[in-house]
Length: 358
Image (tube, rainbow, N blue to C red; front, side, top):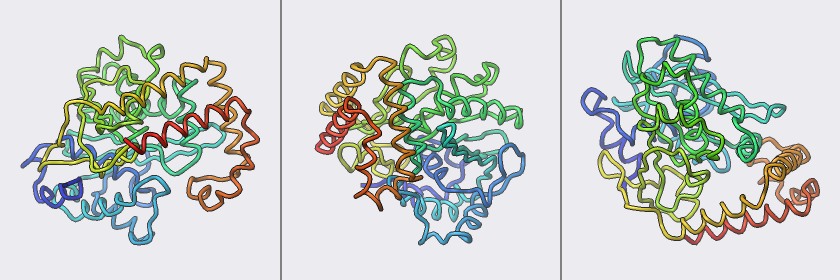
């Protein structure tokens, strides 16, 4: 079945004036922002623009595309996608700007974003999801006990700054995985005067929020513009379900947690192939994970996050790729995690293994 790479082949010769921006274009840009554009795109905060074609070519001059590796869990299909998009009429002529990529072990923060200028007055703000860095994964766990995490606060400020820099522009905001969560948080907590300039917010299989934390008044100002796109056996996108906006459930060519990969989402020309509801097994898995987390009070969640952070420090590894290369020795670092939290780890691991059968 067709995916977003096929879409670029089919629709890449059509400009956005000929065929308006749609849900698939959103996913494509939320994937491309995983590419490291630090050598070619203007740094945040700047009004300097460069086309995606030229920016991508500069990236591939530094690291040839056949040698580029994005990480253990970030699909390398993104490199192919970027390469083909840069040579298409639809995407190659898009201007890009304001690339930012901040990783702080001290602050347990992984944050990256960039702007795609679809026209003179329409900007897609893309927030990157969790990359290969262990700090990014630790920040995901911090969402259990901290609100906002630093990346969420940075997302709202990023939108505010971009809106001030381009005062005539309107915005579509999106991201994949944690990037979808950041897009949603940023849209809710950006300056309320900006919200009428936001056209849509796309959360591509990103987690939601713990309900007690969200300001419902601010959410209500933007909720009708939020679209959550999840695969039929979603795992990540069902976490912390409230305040998700409108749902689009899409079919996938894979099973279980692997459906998180946007390249598995099936399309029909210019729209996703949709299904009516998530699978029964996905619902059961979500309920199991929710019950597991409900066993932990706020202090226990904080303790778990602290221990996992210490676990990461003890390993002295920066990325999942490094962990995989030294996986034999990883288990010795588990001593940094108490017995009760090891049990939570194992239960979570069991649930994810179970998910592979969905």
